[in-house]
Length: 436
Image (cartoon, rainbow, N blue to C red; front, side, top):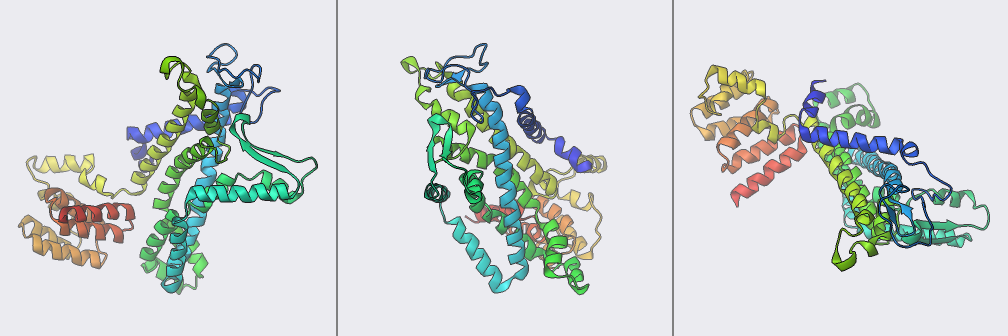
């Protein structure tokens, strides 16, 4: 509960959460917000004469105007929200599940197996996503046409079109329900999840609770499912939240440039592209043709990124950004002891010395003996003792001495040992910047 309250206490997190709730409401209430009519084709509803290729401004029949062909903009936005939520969540969940399992298995196996599986992930990373989209759509089109069907893609008639003069066989019926872009993005989006989880599992597999699971006779799959995955998927969840928005933006982009796809928002932009610049070069002559869809795509992506950042903070309470700013309770306690104390003095005030080596390190810091403090903190990190306290101390030290590259380096080591991979990477990058 405290973590949820802390999450919602930041306006960025609350804004992203509320905007996503609004998108979810629109998606669920689409049949009520904009009911279809007899001329509706999926997410597109014709409210006038389809042969009228001049977009009409907002009016009584279409509150946000119409596109060429008299397609209702509001209806397409509402039903496009449903399509975007389904598509984005499907891609993110599919890539998350496969990538997390792949990374956990490879990390637990270790050795040559891990090297081989990670090289497979690297090979997928080198393959262009757009090439994969085109390749998979060609396979689908060739398969459908070889079975006697007709397949083509045309944004002017609302995207992918497939026709059969007879009842298609079950295999083709399955292909008709598969979005090639969705499958392609899952195939080429799982690798970052695998690498994140792989790093976490390699760090965790030698910990005491995993060793205890092995001693009790737990199988590798049981240990991965019961112990390793639950403790290593935090960064992957953050990445999955961000991927929901980015995958929808990529789908809209692919649809807009004519490589296929069923993004309603992308098709809207493609249909109205010839009307973006109106009379005398005025961009706002036909603003309803492109502005509503553009805003929806942008806000959708930003909202999921804000939510991802908030989840990252919630799952990573000892991140560097938080370490730089101690909690309000800690600041109030330090001020009550001595309002003039420096950040170095707070090391001995804000948390008790539960480890003698930690006490030695803090004493060295108080005496400005940075070399002795460095050795003591390095010892604690190597032995994985008092890591949370060490991270807090080192964050204060890097704030006080930002040009000490070695303290940035061991801060990264401590964060990595504590499973905070993203924060460790930032510390290592800062160390490199200081050196150069």
